[in-house]
Every structure is written in structure tokens, then in C-alpha cells.
Length: 432
Image (cartoon, helix red, strand yellow):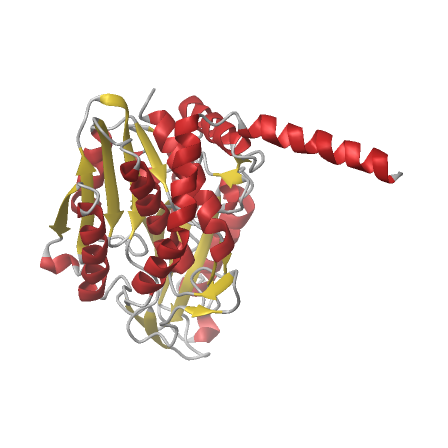
């Protein structure tokens, strides 16, 4: 290609880009500019809150991070409150901020203050690797998402665009290990959803061009098996039977063969203990086992997790598991129990419409197409608790890698672009 031809192509592409950019209104372009001006401040704010330890069980640290956000949101004329949890729950509480109005869609913006890194973790500080990356405990999951919420709203406020809008910001303090009972720990979040039209979750992004329209729910299960304690020479006879460990093995193998296979359904036995006696400490996840090779096992236990895309799928799986557990080997008995944790965020038409709106914003910003992420690859999150009440999108937070590990990073280069996307999306929704 000669130089003149190349120049013509470049000029054509330039005008195409300019034409696309015009899809943003004058107000939106000004909004985007404000995000750009504030970006260095946003990254400094992120560093500040990352350097405050807020492991879920560090109630003081979680609240301290909440107070930093409280001051920032009050500067935007949001009314704020800290909601304490009962002391026996061993959880800090939640930070809520709100602006009241009647214009457009009523929004609920969801984040969380806590991280998986407790006070005894060696990984405690925000450290820049280079201009684009920082090691940051909880910076990706999900203080970076909280900062995107704050600085998108800050840009809207600076341009006088929040007048008469109802926006509720809900940053929970126990997302990584949800306080029980759920009826208390998630009451305020659900109440906020009932006053809203749309919920946007700012959990870790799965990629610059993805958003989450569905999440699997999570449930715990526990299996307890009893056998007849006896000398091992008598195993398999009519009087002694199979023992607890063989019965546990039968059940787990049947789970694998008969329950496994349905799309989005997974179940994982996370801890297994068996012998003459077992002693498991729920609070520490540690246990002790006593037994001998010449003694038929008397007891066995398993604790595991179950992931599902709908309540129907969850209940069908539980019923299959109950049937398998009831079909015992000789001289054994077994029980299975279930505990609810996160409900499923079902992929609805409303969620997909929100995705289409986000995609349009991204296209108008020349950021490319945004598509739905595979729910089979995402864990549970707080948006799941409100999905029955409002249309939802999640995964709108920062990008990074290694979440929940000492190698967690946050991508600093994408914060500005994702904040722009959020600010324009909020602006459009509150003006519908």
C-alpha cells in the first residue's frame, strides 16, 4: 500500500472514530472528562482503603473502611448510615448511602467492604508492580469496585446530574463469609432492593468485555454416617455389616454417578473424616480422627458445597441426594442435611435488557462489545439476594487476577475506562 493510500485509510478511520464518539451526548462527554480528571485521585483512594485491613472477622477494620467511604459519600450530599450487626454474629455491619428522588430508574449499587485477608495474613499492603498493576489484598475483590461506584457518582455529582434521582449504595461488611442468620445479615440489602428498580453489582470483573447476567447459588451440605464398631475380621457378615467408611464411599460414589452431569450443577465434598471417633471444629475447619485398621469404622462425616442455577435445580439435586443416602448398606445408617447460603441469580429477560444497555454504553465509548459471562464460571455474590426483586447486572468492578490469593492484583489501567462506563450507564438509567 502506497503512502497516499495509507493516509486516506487513516483519515477514513479517524472520521469513523469521531462519528462513533458523537454517540455520546454533550453532557455525557463532559461526564467522561470529569472521570478522567479524577482518575489519579481514585487510584490513590483505592490504595488508602486497601491498606486498611478489613478481613471479614476484623470488625474494627471493616468499619474503618466503611467510615472512609462514609466521609466520601457525605461530600456528595448522600445521606449515610452504618448498620451494626448483632454481636453474636461476629460480623461488623454494613455501610449504606442514599440520595432520594423520583426521576428515572431507582438504582441499588452493591459492593462489599470485607476481604478474605484477615489480620494475621502476611499480605497486607498495596504495592505497585508497575504503572498498570498493583498487588493489593482485596483491591480486585472488591475495593476496586467500590471505588468505581464512588468515582462514577462523584463525576455525576460534579456535573449536577444526581438531582432528584434515587440511588442507594449498599456496601456489605461480610460478603466473603456471610453472617448467619441470613434473615438478619441480608435484611437491609433486600429491603433496599424492594425500593429499587435495578441492582448493579460491582464484584470483580471477569474481563473488560464481559458482564454477569446470572450467578449460581450456593448451598452447604453435611453427610453423617454411622456403622457398627467391631473387630475388622467380622466386616461384611450379617452381624457387623459394612462399616461407616464403606457406606460413606458408596454414597459419595453414587452422588458422582447419579447426581452429576446437569449443566451448571456442581457439588464438592470439601472435608471427609472417618474412623472410630471424629471431632470436627466448625469454626476452624480442623478436625481429629481416631481409629485403627483392625476396627470397623463407627462413624464418618463429609461437609461439602452445592452450586446451582435455579431453586428448581437445587431442590431436584437435594432430593436425589436424599434418595441415595436412604439406601443404606447393612448395619449402617446415614443422614444428609442442607444449609442455604446464596440463592441463584437467574438469567432473566430483564437482566439481558440491562446487558444490552451496558453494551450500548460501551460501544458509544468506543470500548467494544460487552457480552454475558458464563455463570458456570462465577461464584455467588450479594446480587443473588436481590435478584428476585429487581433486574440485575454484576461483574462491573475492577479487573485483576489472583483474587483470594497472596498474588491478588488489580489492573490500574482499566479503572478509568470502567468508571466512565459506570457513570454513563447510571446517567442513562436515572434519566429513563
